[in-house]
Length: 261
Image 1: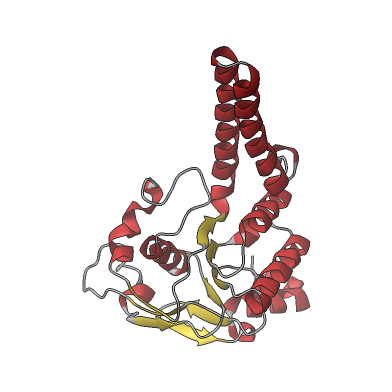
Image 2: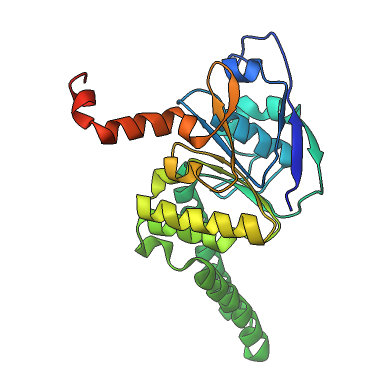
């Protein structure tokens, strides 16, 4: 099962962002034919901008230090996102939006939650006693334990390990997930672990993924629809992406590239 079938995008002759991005200025509609959709393209081509705007339209929870409404880094795409029209096969009620750069904000959010819960315990110990104290503290400790079970201690693992742990803890069946450049935090081996996780959820648990990425590994997800952003947005195979071509040619003959650097 996959949920979002099509989006119609706002059109304008405006030269203001994001209509100043050539690919978005010419894009009127986009159809999602498979449970995994990949956005690829050069920096500034519009792939992450469209992903952010879509997250705003879908009003997805954000994994980070703030929600989408209060995230000032999204101000430039909010109006554009709100004008997107969505067409659903069936409305999804689970999902999130996650950018690679939001990981550390999410860690800080968890740390703040832990400090608040510890403060609640101190407050309860001052005001309560007996069974009331035991029940109140037990409830807080249960919440702390649940977070540890879900994410572990993210301050004691590497960036890539923690990033993958957050995704493993938050991804659920029958959800729609928008993820921006996850490979920024992940080694090739960790990218393969994420590949396996996404493949399983898409094929067996009714999840839909829309991912902006530069990773040739993630581009090879089975049956993924790949949109390459450039002067226009084109549907391509992963072998036709610029990322795959450049990486393949470089690995086949790195000296030829180095001579021109």
